[in-house]
Image 1 (cartoon, rainbow, N blue to C red):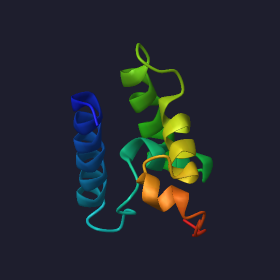
Image 2 (cartoon, rainbow, N blue to C red; image 1 turned 180 degrees about the horizontal axis):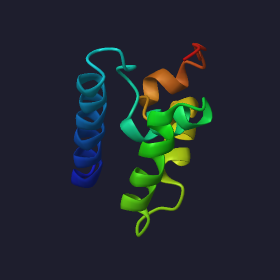
Image 3 (cartoon, rainbow, N blue to C red; image 1 turned 180 degrees about the vertical axis):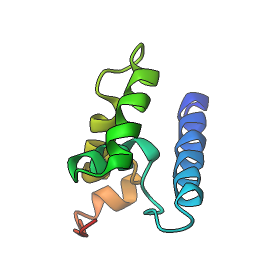
Length: 95
């Protein structure tokens, strides 16, 4: 594992912690702020309609549609360790 991958893992963990703290524990503990913003916007929630454009604007120079891509990454389980993905088991939960 490279140092860049380790740093990315730390940043994702901090992002997920920040989401749970911002929502006072109501947020999904394995969801990033970006993925939550996309999900909430798709649900028609005001917070999503405000947060998603702001977050996408912050990431615009690096990645287009950051929030959508983050949500899709969560759905695919892209952050799961290889051992979890190799098991072939995928639990579906509604959010």
